[in-house]
Length: 554
Image 1 (cartoon, helix red, strand yellow):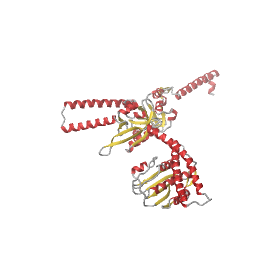
Image 2: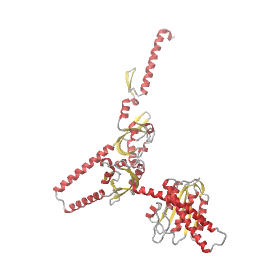
Image 3: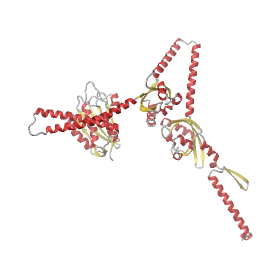
Image 4: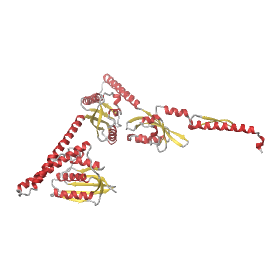
């Protein structure tokens, strides 16, 4: 046998050598796993061979982790396979929560198209471009995105390097200002040294006058005023902005105004601002601006676009009006209405009780005229009670306390009850019913009846000649639409925009109406609490259709 050639001591020595080689191999494997080895030298029949490790470049990984730029690696689905700590910090998230997210969650809507173009191009060739990133609070940051593909063991991936351009943009704006100032100085020098034609001189003079008029007007109105470019970057503020915020131009220009808005108001402001930029519609929102003393005050913001002859937007002109005092006065008014309504309710209940006692008096027959007066007094008391109930509801809405129990409601039966009651209240009107049977929803029957009666009351109130009123239900896509149509005076576009505002009443010279203008405001709140939608379709002189939509129980 071959083993007979070796002594026992020689076998022990070979065994020890094999054990040492095994330990060295295990240490090498651990070093590879931990990224401590960059390459291996292996001896074979051809001599010593050098083997580099693609995934073990420790120096490269340390460099990526320590760099000031954000770095991520994506797969074909834009899922983040790797992220360094810098990118996680830019997005305001822990590193472990970034890995596995779809990179698109950090792209605001305004940059989606450009991002998609860069991604498509990045898989084909190295490329770069500027986009906006949105962190978890919705704050936008301009960045340069550089794309390059990587060959990994698992397949091809896309590496992104993201450089924060905030400081660079501020420098660019300051350089732009300096260049504009230099250009203005050069133009002034040219103007002094060269005679222009009379027509050119006149037009230049008109332009300068218009510009000075705008600056004079902007700097002497109490509102803060700005202009912004079609992409959203602000390029001008009036003096009132600097007086109020205490900021410098470089701090506010571009997208810097975000720092001046209360953090709770910023997401809603950005949503409406970007929506206006996309659609070209008027921008309007209420928010709080930080003053130079770090206090906040409420402002109403409105901005409208200036368009050229082709309809393209040149720039936007916006104002921010201080409404802090109006807000406080409205709060005091709401408090007074709530207290006054509550105090009026007790004597009104007593008065209603006394009228009922008089009506039920049996010892002797009441004269007909007294019965007539009691009936009229009861009608007046009911109207007054309805107004007080509306005032109390408005106070509860403002205090966030308009609550009521929810349950399963047969909407079809509820509407039939409302129709029967309305026929007794308004016998001179013709109520036409187009209802589907057994429509069940989750809601509060009493409050929904309040909305329906309000729709019918308005239909009666604003119908001058045609006495027809149509109540209709339509079920579609798990939603029921309930509508009340009249053939009265109708609504203008301006009235439609304001019809659900608190205390707003439609005024018509041909028709004098009563009420405080709270019914539709309360109805809007009730339907919102039912997770529904309320609206109106109307044209001036052609009647109106008020409706609400609610999810049905399947």
